[in-house]
Image (tube, rainbow, N blue to C red; front, side):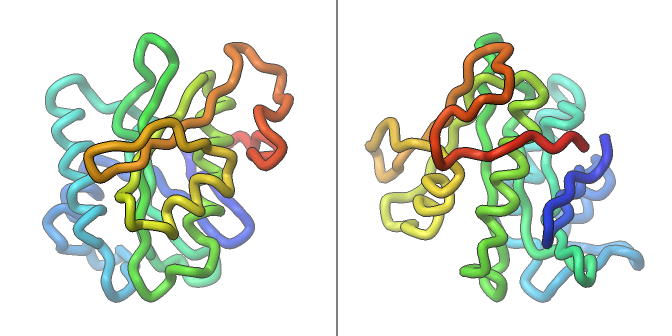
Length: 182
């Protein structure tokens, strides 16, 4: 599995060894981490990925990705899946950025690319959630075509669905425009 690239970002699939460094907060000499990376969310997501690898095996392309700026290669956040698609073709996603780069559209750009990848890989539904007061994350999910489907217990739940075997037609007017294969 190679990197996924957007106009401004590289989504780098993390290996187990790279994830162990993220969870420990200890970069290798060649890791390029911006100040503030990894965040608590990156550490939590890395822990989930490592537990998945230990219990059911490496989910491959459905693991975690480091969000890197193309301009300088610096890691500024993380995005990824909570595991491989289930029997219905559904995956759960999560993402986050260091505070210093929020508000620049990076989360939207990264999530849009992850959705393109998921759709090209045959995923039929992507779900995610955010706190009621995390308006920025709500805007990100809405911007990529995800719809609010449920609220409760302090969370808002979002989803986007595609028909199995869809030919690339858009699920909604504001959803990702095309699939870019890695």
